[in-house]
Image 1: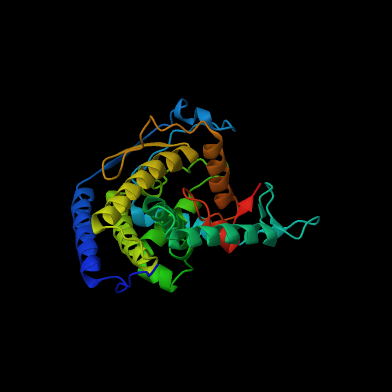
Image 2: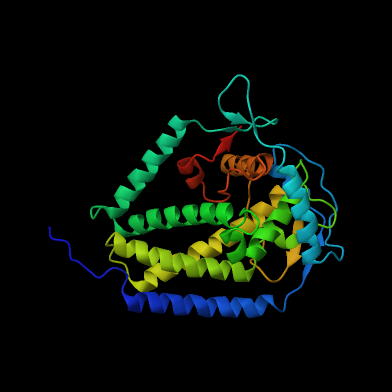
Amino acid sequence: KTRETRPFVPIGMVRLSTGLSLLLSLSFTQVSSRCSIQTTRSSPEILGWRSKGLRSRGLGHRGVTQRESWKVGSARYNAEQQAPVSKSKTSSKETTNSGYKKISALEQAKAVGVAGTMTALSYSDSVPVPIRLLLLTYMIWSSAEYLFHRYAMHAPYNSWGDKCLRNYNRLHMAHHGETNEDMTMREGFNPHGIYFSYKTSAISMLAGALLLTAASEATNIDASLVTILSSTVLTSIIYGLFWNRFHADSHEVKLEYNDGLPALDFLKFDNKIAEWLLANHVGHHDVKGVGNYNIVLPGADHVFGTYYER
């Protein structure tokens, strides 16, 4: 069977996807600029799924400005970074005091094999187009989550990641500095470090549209631009909804805001997958931000050997 050759990433498709995504971004940016935020106490019912019952605390923004929050939180985070992850006396694996240890080279090799299989299937004409698009979408979003979290949100001070995305970097460093050892938040924490705003969701739509368009052309998937954009928008919305509920719950806070996708109460996390995701995110804070960069879509951490398990 002769495969039809097409030009890589047609300019018209890129322009159209970029234009639509930018339009969404501008619209959401205008919405977020008119929004306010309030913080309320955590709900014991919402937090009941956690295997470790940590005491809920009443936390609020309490007039702390974003700049002050960045400054104080970043200082705490940098101080905690001075305590590096140690190596166990009985194992060559890097481990922490609470038992998180880095995966072995063999486990990483298995993850690379799984990723290679997914890539091969996405190239195969014998696999249905929807499944190929699903595989591509997952790999793109898992990789993007990993790369953005590691090289932008944890970028060293004054590095290219810090210079290009300074607001996200400083806000996330402050979030780590404001997180207690039991995953609750310090008094006066900045709630913007907990949830994704509409602006952030719109930016993810833009990046996802461009990456999925390029990947579908590289794998010669015959999918329309409407299908690609629909997949990107749907994935971004689902991701934002899940993140805004899961991340708040993992830090035992319940936020009220109107400049981001809501943390829906009907999303339940009383299952094994949610417990694994919670342990994964707890590990990210436990190892002081040097691993477990995937929060919602695991995979890239295992491939790059930065996953810590307990």
